[in-house]
Image (cartoon, rainbow, N blue to C red; front, top):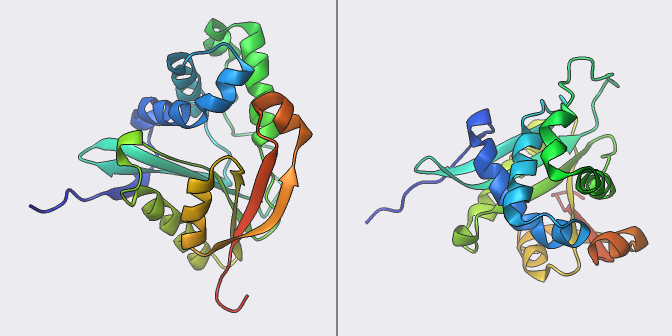
Length: 210
């Protein structure tokens, strides 16, 4: 029997709910420490966050199998021109009021702490998530290979990077298999206080000639 193919396609609004659920599954360990939101609340929060039009210097893709989202990756880079985001759709906070003021504030603080501003020439993997039923089946590898091709095809980009938590050795092992190496190890007090995740590895893909 032939395996059902997996395709990597651009993010569309119709996938928001499924990707929101994947993000909730991946990050619930962090944000449930920070807030009192359950997984369903987190999934809805990320679903509504995805409704906001992203910055021009970001891109999200989804891994699809038989129309189901089984993984997703988001990358970002420093724009060539410092835009003022005049055309960016700002979120209507009324859509988030159901989560409660303090939960919303804590979520925004947490997202701010986890955010990273790439340097010139850097393509940064903001997140990569895979459905729990499809882990260790090559989905994460396909998503990472897509990001590697983006860097290969864009002359303005010269490196691919990401952060991985010290408590996630399984993910780090996958990255190492795809030529990522630890560039620096960081101990973050604020991440320890918010998420109980003090240790982070900043990893950069090693490319030929580097």
